[in-house]
Image 1 (cartoon, rainbow, N blue to C red):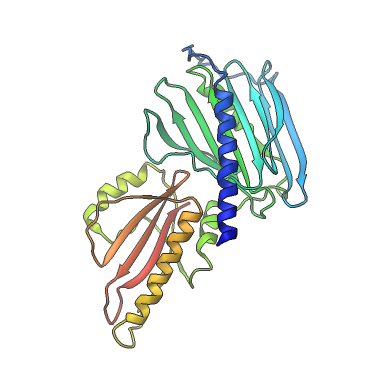
Image 2: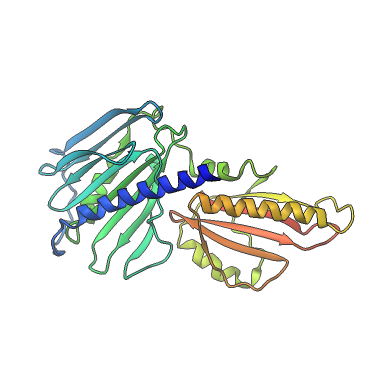
Length: 322
C-alpha cells in the first residue's frame, strides 16, 4: 500500500509539473486576436521536420518520433522532473509541447463543460493518441492528447497544443497530423481495448462479449444515458462479465455475495487508481445498478446485479468503448 501511495504521489507530482509548464508557456500569449484563417489548402512545402530518437534511460528505453512545423516556428528541447523530457514548438499562430517520460496521466480532460470551457473528445487514431479539444470563453482552442506504452518503456507521451489567436485551428491540426512515431518497437502502444482490459484481467475469470450497443440494467433512464454516452463518441463496445450463481447456489447465495462484494471493491479500487472518474447517474436503489466512469473522454459502465436468487441475477460486468 505504501508503495502504491508513493507511486500515485509521483504520478500526481509529474502531472502537475507537466501541466504547470503548459500554463507557464501560456502566460506568454497576449490577449486573443481574431484573424481570419485562409480557406485555401495550407502549403507545407517549406515546412521543417523535427526528428528525435533518444535513449532516455535504461528503464524507459527509447522515444522516436517526427513532426513537421511551419517556417518561422522555433523549437526548444527541455529536461523535466525525473525521467521526463520535452520539446516545445512556438510560432506566432500557436504553440505545441510534446512531453514524454515515466508516468503521468491525462486527467486534465473534463467530462463536462467547466468554468466557461467546453470539452469534446479528440484523437489522432493512426498514432494511438486520444484526449480532448478544449475551447475557452474567448474562443481559443487547446488540444490535449495522450498515449501510453505497451512495454512500460515510455509510460506516457503528452501533446498539448494551443492557438495564440482564434481561427488558427486548421493550422494547428495540420501540424498535429504530421506527428508520427518512427520506431514501433520503442513505442509499441497497447490499443485502448487492451489497456482497459489489462486493468481488470487479473481480478476475475471474465467472460468476454462484443456488444452492438450499451446494455443497461436500469432501463428507466436508458435513452437519457445513451444520449449522454454519445457525447464521448461511438465505436465498438466490449463487455467483460462474471456470474456468481449461474448454476444456482448451494443455499442462500450468501457465500457468493461475499465474493461478489470483494470483486466490486477491487474493481472500484482499480478504477480510482487508474484515473477513472465516477459520474453520478440518477438511479434508485435496486437489485441491478449501473455506474458510469469516464477517463480521457472514454466511457465505462460498471454494472452490478445483486438479486439473491437461487438461479441467475448475481453478476458483475464492465462495458467500455474502444
